[in-house]
Length: 114
Length: 111
Image (cartoon, rainbow over all chains, first blue to last red; front, top):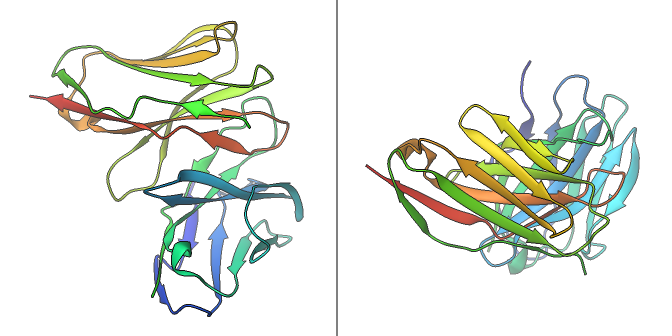
């Protein structure tokens, strides 16, 4: 099976712009979660989508949003970019919400805000 | 606030030795526990998960969970230089797939 794919892999944006990142989960996986990783804050949960519905949301401002499509592909959007949004954005997919709930990460999108 | 704590390291072990990585968590309602390995510049790679008290072995890796003491550990036997990476402990608290991560422990295996 192909792994989780994320596009684009690298992105440079200017403060105030908006950005959309895309994630395609492992085939058959219905849950997609997004995380932000920075040197200072580590890995932090943004949100999770399951069957096109947001099921969990982390402690991030409303500028961060996401959605999931019927084929389980997901996008996240960040509006009005700030310098502090520079980070590695990781998408993880999971087959379901069973007790193990293992998640597999994609390669990430490295976002740089200048 | 639910917290996951790890010693940042670096933890240095000689090749062939056992590396022991520890993680504590704050919420007794935690359901399942994960260990990820992350090489510099790469994304986290799932090594093991555990959700019952006791030990779980997979090859050179053993995860240990003690819910009463609220800690989970990862043992790496016969450590190799290729095991040098940052090891992330993650805890799942609810029915969804939200994971709370520790800051990671950097492991260095010296030849």
